[in-house]
Length: 410
Image 1 (cartoon, one colour):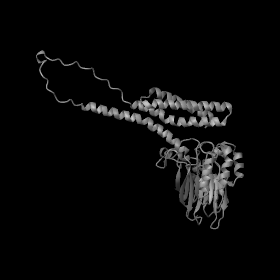
Image 2 (cartoon, one colour):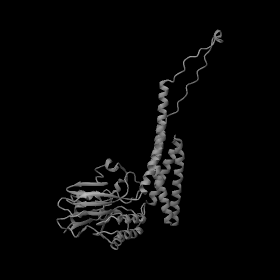
Image 3 (tube, helix red, strand yellow):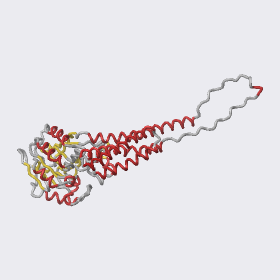
């Protein structure tokens, strides 16, 4: 996150916490708002000190603390205000009635006990409703706060290996199952770093891989790119390692990124293909560059003709028969009319928010986010979009980071 964006987020969240604090009716939420506000202010101080002293370590600490706090405050503050709306208004007690007068001639007469008074049904109903509203109002901010904390815990989790099985297109079998590990959207230098890559590289070394591929957005802190690739170089593969670039690779020094890949064991595919021959049957692996390289900065860029032109160029001269594996950072390449191929993509991070394994963005807007996470099939082709290894926004809930291992069988 940039310095300016972090300060803006801190300002907005601080104002929302202050407003929610003074309007809250739920007792514990006022203390929570004060604590969060203190953390936001501490993060802002660290941001300013790190910026003025040119201390990246302090700046990183300030950025991390600010965003961690903001991501709890964002759901909590509106929940506090909503709880105020649900909190029942105090009931005014009716004026006390004067004591009954007793006639003089009956003053000394013994009083016989009467039946015990029973509460009016309406009063009991009002008490029950007030209790229910208070419980709901008190629970809402707690649930919102736990959602914010849970999303950050999810973002901190190490990527797990996810096993995916797909069928090779009809007539394009590789004669034996092909096992491919895919790394995408690592975004090293933000929430994930080379230590996470080291753990994953060790796990992948035990998987008897045929190919290891990267589908873009490796490092947002370029100093971590070379060490990460050096770790991945150690992962044994039978048939090699390949990669394509993503939009974040172009945000930074793309020439440096290319030189670093060229110095590694990864073959960087830029609108080109390679024919891999093994002891069974040859197959083609192709890769296309990100639209950012052509000046298309929209992260949701969708132009089927653009992707079709890139794919035509990448597959020019490729064998007409045999299995085709295509690497594209963006899953929108699936709309380019690719026939009888297996496409591996990333970019979407799965929306970072899911319900029962289904991305929320796909439920909300399936036309805008048609392939956010999972396996998709059409025209005899299969697309797998990974939820990604990392992220630039530190929040994941119901959408865990992953390293998929895809087995293509005939």
